[in-house]
Image (cartoon, rainbow, N blue to C red; front, side, top):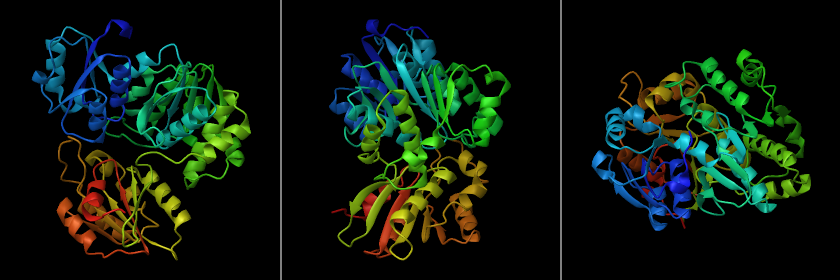
Length: 441
């Protein structure tokens, strides 16, 4: 969509507390525009935006949007979970009403865009690429689905034409982008509340491949990626394909553990080579990479010696990767690992139920919180209790809790000490339990 942002002065963001849409809001603040917004609750993101001058209301209602706005931007959850409000907004305001992905397409238009896509690893790979470019004075702009530790921000605005973005496949959002360089970390079944099956997911990636101008960085041995590259609709893609596996032996020793992070780093090295960054310089930058917010983030220790982590893993493959990484740091003989997991969405938990049940190998104990439904309709055919039972049948110790308060009480009763690691996992609010139970010193 064509939109002249120079003529836009006042913008309202519906769902401004989301990690992606908040980056656009911050960018508009930096451009001197008036930024307003609303969200159903307050969080760290809205607090940071308010510090920068955004005016944010709590709630989600038509009356919260001023009549004199020039543009309305909404998170893509709104049409799905509040269609009445979405219709009212479109019927009431005679201004452009755009989704976050559409805005992302607009702000990256005419840029040397590096889009990082894939089912897993997008955030860390985007951050690794950003670290290399920043350390080598390439002065990139970056939008990422987390906070970069160095800047405590999900946005970097640089002066060069390089724009690195995390490209989400949900509802084919990434098709608003026209990348010069496309990274596909991997492709697996996910977002099955929207996609029909893996073939449907592959079709979306095939469309993105067709829109990519210069380079596609991917694992050409991955069966799903093979299907994407050989798809009849994408056989005419013009970009050169680079297998990031050929860079694995060039990955330096990383501060972030796990095989998955070595794969992410290989992707970043491939991008660095395309952008003519010397290999040793890129390797040094990767060696300095400290990770991002909520990606197996070490929060600290308690006075009793318990090591606390918080992790965004909400897919079986991500859970397995995080536990493998933790066991790389803490072998069985060294530490006991307790996982407090909050399943994310009824639809995802149901679609990937058997995989979830088998994904907690490496944990000594698994606590399961109530499913974070994110405005989905309740589905009585699936529950945390059923998942805990399946995890036990798979051979792990697991217990489900009907409330956060019960999980907090059980966690306190564990009397954890210096032999213990406690990690919260999920895309929801599991880390609230940590804040209630533990005092990190």
